[in-house]
Image 1 (cartoon, one colour):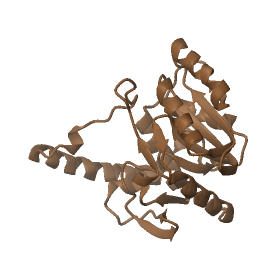
Image 2 (cartoon, one colour):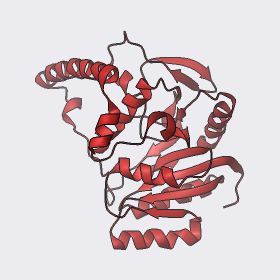
Image 3 (tube, one colour):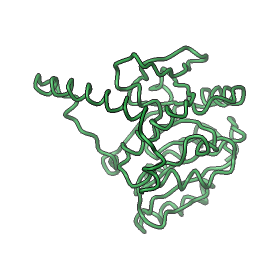
Image 4 (cartoon, helix red, strand yellow):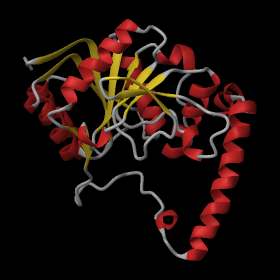
Length: 268
């Protein structure tokens, strides 16, 4: 996989479950973008035998190391599995349903440079469902995420996300492993709580929609469907959403201050 854009010290980690066509699409997109990593690791969450066979057939073409879970867990378990297999100082984590654009390689190079220069920087986010609410300009399109206790926007608590990002491969040493046994959204939230409790430092690319596209073709829909009622413009739903968000803000505030993630980990 010789390429024009080389990223020494970086492993591309892709999590996969029963979407081999999407996996092949993202692997081919990195080839097309001429992006070269020290290694590619694909973590499979116990896909069906038919899907797993298709994944194994790709190895000769795309030269990746495949690690397979003994049984289906969830996204948290799959990320743990994949991260344990990484041997390089940095991990570029991407789920199988993303595609890098032509602009991604340059921003990844900038992010890698920032992390090499700033040892306190824990991760750099490249894509998001929503813009992080409090940002301080950092450079080259990136801003530092700043957690403000006075901001009433509940999105401030989601400072970490499972969407594409670059992180240090010893991430677990500071923030702990992903807590398994919950839904993907809950596991992601618990990691965000840990990130805040351990005073993590992260960057956010503000024009994130230009770096990657998120595609779920009809034949391989997302394995994490999301509720649509929160986007309704019905006055009743709007009022209920207002009450829900006030409750969520208070709950998240208390979680960050008092939740003991270690006790949750031991129970699972």
